[in-house]
Image 1 (cartoon, rainbow, N blue to C red):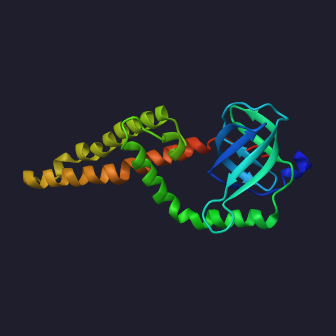
Image 2: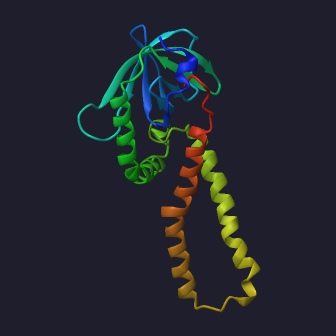
Image 3: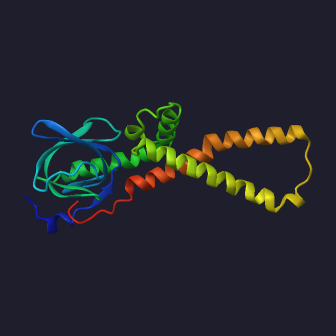
Length: 213
């Protein structure tokens, strides 16, 4: 087995995929991977797992053809509120790791569109179904973020109008109505989702990666 000192020499890449964790034939976690290296993976904090526990990991391979997932085994070397670091029993093959890097790079262009689709899919449901699965945050986090960004950004958008109201020309009412609808459409389709998704991304990846992941 590789040591923690050796493992720190492995390159780590941001991963952002859900990893299935199985122990003694039973799934014990389905957690977001913060980063992945040839020697191990760092999962977002979930249910604490005992240090030294042997696990089987089912890691998805995003995009591309051929192999769709990597199934490997590892040992928990750290588990706390900041994340669960799992060291692979055997390092990933260099070619397989580079293949993952390439797939992540290829799929990055589709990530933004997929994130928007997931956001609107969740927001259309009154109970925010599949919020954690699609966006990686809890329903409470979604609601809190939405209301805070909505109130903050609306206030900021009104501020320039209030400051420069004296220099704004008078427009007919129909023009004001049209502009209000246009702004509302832009807000709902672009501004609010963009701000919320940025916050979600920060919350998912704010856990610092430590040696051995």
